Image 1 (cartoon, rainbow, N blue to C red):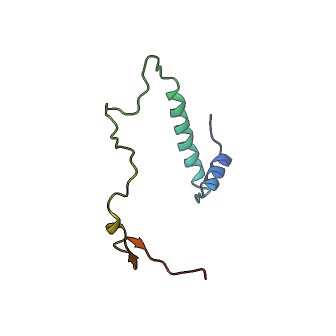
Image 2: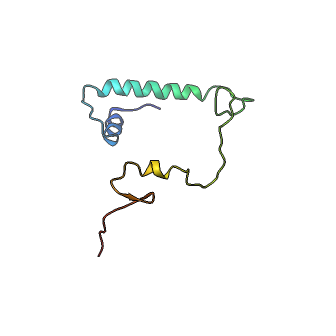
Image 3: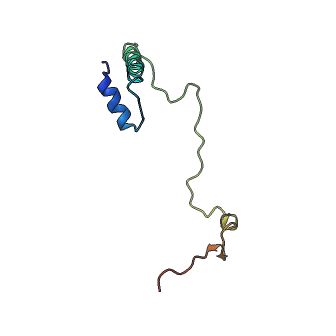
Amino acid sequence: MSVDAATVKRVAHLARIAVSDEDVPKLQSELNAILAFVEQLSEVNVDGVEPMTSVTPMAMKKRQDVVNDGDKAAIIVGNAPATQDNYFLVPKVIE
């Protein structure tokens, strides 16, 4: 698979990247090199290789799925301009 100059311009347009006509050949070459590398990866024999999510074995940190208020209501409303009993006070907008 190779990318032509029109495709480079279209990708740049879709990505909202300003690309001058002088830069198109260089970007075309770089994109083609990237695609060639990706094609090389498909040639790697991965038979017998277990799928993994990390290079090093590690356990995911988990916490209890418990609903609570965190006991931090006063901290949360601490910077609010107006509060009452740990609730935000907002001006009335509908009469």
